[in-house]
Image 1 (cartoon, one colour):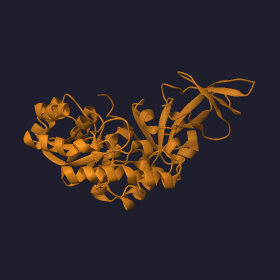
Image 2: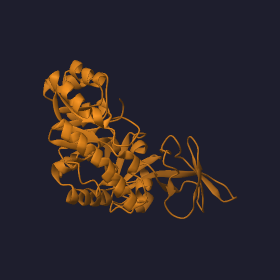
Image 3: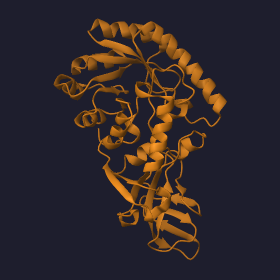
Image 4: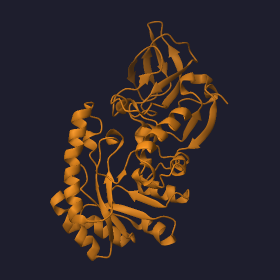
Length: 337
């Protein structure tokens, strides 16, 4: 089958790029030094490639992702790097032996939820500068003591410097990461445990503290990260069809907001021309196209783009467009909550 035989819009992933990116990251972060974040691709088939490369511990963002990974036999060591107030579904997995589950906590309430749900292992999530989750660093030791007092095993700490991931200035990014990790290091001294978890694709080479890097987007990259000059290549394309062509110099493609995440900006047209705007079902582009022609768009943010699709099609050469050979079609089976 060729990519041109697929119903559009369709997500294409370049298998050569995927192999390159996995090898480049594994060389720097081998085995357990990398805890791949499945939120980036939501696909157990891709996760299995990472496990085969020695990365058998995974990071998840939702309970559904944890459940799906366990069902796929990839539950050796799953971290839910997110606070939850209902851990009962996670406790079922632990009780059945289907998965080892660790949950991030940052408050007495989230500690109580983990205990009530039947999960026995936690990381203390520490605010290292991004205004999202994480406890005050000064409270980390006390929360660890509280968790141990109610029978939990505290494996260590977690801190995500997400506010620095996309800084285009490498030196500024590196300096900021060092500052954030100094905060996490102090908290770790108060908490104890073997695990220091954090980081991401943008700090893959500048985060020198974490024992495990929570990177995910690097597997296929996207336009936002591509600006940083990292050694990972863009390998994801939304294949669309030109369904309407104007004699005034534009064409309407059949993939828009419902097929592309726009939080990091417009997609980039593969080939000559520019994206004018995206609507619900269409993207309008400039250039010379014919009705029925297959046209590729590179998304600016792959994580939420992949989450909009049921299937990820692996092709031999994504730059070949409609002529690319479809090697496999993988279900995006970790969607939902």
